[in-house]
Image (tube, one colour):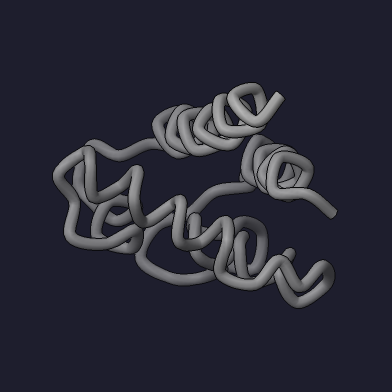
Length: 99
C-alpha cells in the first residue's frame, strides 16, 4: 500500500460520525490521529513513512507533536481531516515532482 492510500484509509476511518477523539488513542468508537495510524499500521505496515510526514506537517504548524496538536483545545474532527489532507498533499506533490 502506498502512503496516499494509507492516508485515504485514515481519512475514511476518522471521517465517520464518531470516528475521531481526543485525549486517548481510542474511545471505543473513534481514534485520535496517532490511534488511527496505529490501527491501520498494524494491518498495512506502512512503517514510519506516514507518521514522519504527519510529524513534519504538525511541526510546521507550530505543534511539538501530533498528540499535542490532536488534543489541543479547539482542534476538531474537521481540523484533523484537514490536517490529513495536507499530509496527503505533500505525498501527491512529491509523486508529481518525480514524474
